[in-house]
Image (tube, rainbow over all chains, first blue to last red; front, side):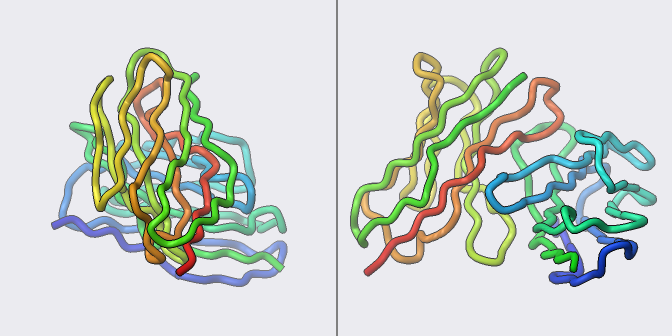
Length: 113
Length: 112
């Protein structure tokens, strides 16, 4: 069966520090991968998605970047965090052949102080 | 592009009350529609989905019918439980067919 792992679960980082959040998927090949951010009062915002290794699409301009170095690995990064980067970050995957919705990871609560 | 609007919360109910959370959509064509649920401190879980007009999705006592006439996908449950307390998100596929677009979420609080 397929599983998705996301870590860390919580993170407190100072303004200006770098960020690296990792998401991995097991039990499937060539998944579509997604990063969403959930901020208070703003619902779920799509940040990036990837349909394959090295293929990243950005949905909104921001202080973040994403990479997919392996088929099963999706990384969200920032060189310098801003206070506005605080939120709940969710990784998700879906099969490439049919879109039946997502399976989400358990999320990372990021607080920038 | 495609978009979804769901009712503002919070919704506060007593146990065994009837639940309706409204969701309306704007879309090109007839994309699949979804309801996701997020329990406190967790990621989102797929609750139910409907892939074409007039389909009814159902799971754990929740139901939603894909209504193209009213462009709606309202979530209902006949008798809520305290364990149903969570945030509920309505979603649909974006116009490019590459990702889900979510509503802002509706918080449900059920008391005993």
